[in-house]
Image (tube, rainbow, N blue to C red; front, side, top):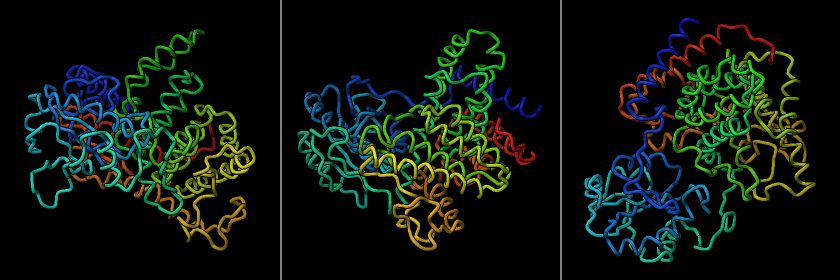
Length: 511
């Protein structure tokens, strides 16, 4: 226990020392603000030389447009309303078509951006460039061969710019499109690679769940322990590096802001209100999350999919990252978390009833992953019937027994699912487990790996070795030495906790 104590003390010291330098309590809120400031109603994201590469590298969007302008240029001022009309469709939490294109602006009249504008050979204003977000770090030169960055050559009005975009990606978007109209949502039934987009939804769901817990004042004396256990699970096995770091920061500071004697008074509302204000400073998945929209989990209606889908992906991803000695702890942590913090009453009761049916402790991670998969299908089976009767389901994403045969033909011995429940299907559970490991393991994080986020982050090598049980997402955290040390301490804390869990005998108690 003394090891944990000293790790906690050292982390607190590092975090507080870092906060004195940065003017913020958290080490995760370091992205600079946009160039010369922007109207709150603007949709285009203003970038500068300090955050240009980071924002473009981190965006979930497939494409980006960067407009280089000067704030003193009359033509630029006159063009801005046109650019904003298009940006409204793609940027922000109320975007009509989110996660497709990130539309940004750089003010070349600011001295901080002189080198950045030279890097793109900006010779007149405004000038627009298009390409994959991660490719902008190399800059652009006229007549450059094999560059994936292109100059937009037809942009003078909003209509012309949107028509140009439609030609590039084969879409038919219109300036009058509204949310959930003219949707072009791909089905996820036959393409396993689409789960890669869900890494952003897992982050979104984690941040949303944390916000709900704070908004609803759900941390009580009886629920405190279950939240700590779930945070421990996230620190060690969340598929997103920034969520692991944010969870570690919350966990390290938890006893300071939520001590055991907090509820010694009968006035429960007072401490929980203060707790909400304090913990809101800790953004559990980083400054940019929640983004306010969904990618893989986006439904065709405002009220479908979204948070519940993202939470399921999170739980499945946790189930394939744990080791055998952690399977019972993961099971009780997830069951208790849903029981105490999921506020859909019928869903909460159904899930915990399934947890209560388990009479023997899990000894293998495979068994826990398959149990969670089976539980998910049992819930889908119930909801299929209810939604078919009440017509409340998402017409483009109806509930199905999962995985469908199109995604995993080897998972089925005989007949694929028709209108029957999961119990009537002859599953090959060995193949199901292989599919779960691939789908929620490497494929889930492949989008981050494809962006090169993992390749050059040497500062996090120690943390990556200590924390991950599979290949995991690593997000650059800057060059500050104190932050690098904090990262290693977070990893050491998670590693020590995991080693303690492996040495314990499995328990049947669910607290």
